Amino acid sequence: MNFDLDEQQQAVAQLAEQIIGGQTTVERIKAAEAAQDFDRRLWSELAGADLLGLCLAESAGGSGMGAVELALLCRSQGRHVIPAPLLATLATAMVAGEHGQDVSGVIAGSVVMTAALSEPGANLTDLPSLIAVAEGDGYRLRGERLSVPYGQHAGVVVVPARVRGDVALFAVHTGGSGVTAEPISTTDRQPAAHLTLDVLVPAACRFGDEAALTKLRQLWLTGQAATVLGVCEGALAMTAEYIRGRQQFGRPLATFQAAGHRAADAYITTEALRVAALSAAWQLDNGDDAAADVLIAAYWASEGGQRVTLATQHLHGGIGADIDYPIHRRFLWATQLANSLGTVSSHLAELGALIASGAPA
Image (cartoon, rainbow, N blue to C red; front, side, top):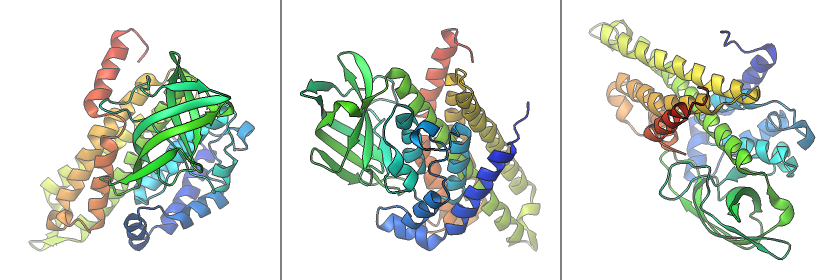
């Protein structure tokens, strides 16, 4: 099986790395974290390079690429752990754009989109608890949505809800009244908010069905897995450089067998995550049933990401415990992503139920 990227995908990966890596400094990351914001200069650079429209449907004004390219962008962001609403905006806009919603602001870099996928007291589910009630020429959405990534910065929040037993998605524009965002603290220090809704949404802003929600969820999980992949790759690169230069008993730490074995185990886990994440993205792009592949990628991201970043922290010795040292930020990102939209046990339970049902895996 060939897991190599084609020439176009290699160009995307190189451009993303050039822009994101070239913009990343510890000072800019800290400034964004302190302001509970994101790196807006980077966002502008990504829009200027047409990377924000890369994965969106051609009918919506995008370049018509797909989940693999989304994964490559997320992987680059994870490698540099720079705050930006990349996955939240692009995964949401990919589904919204396919169903006729206006995503031109996303392509231009002027609009941040996100989705309220978390359910209170439950792992990620395709059955939303929020009820939408027909009212006049639209629908009334009333309730709370918890832990919405970049919820306080989003111009549009896609909210799944039930309408008389059916599942639908609603593009909620946050500029008017009826949407209140309460910023919250997160493990990885990226912005998120609890949203309180009491808003009348025009009928034209209703789109999709349960299948659209499933696709949004799968894109989001695949993008998270790719982000964790980048986090692990970045952590390994930092650690390799550190243990080559760190002297202990007159020789480099990398020459000690225990350190080498620990680093090798982390590398193997990262490679497994790479295969799982890109396989899930490829399945999504090829229209196959990607449910099992996405769950496998989500498992590796949740389990493997923490395993790798913990190992790299340990290999840094005492400095790895310094919460201001860059390796610690990668541990925080892996920890946050491991518990977002489901945990290891929930992904395994869902995968087991899928296999037991006789679905292809």
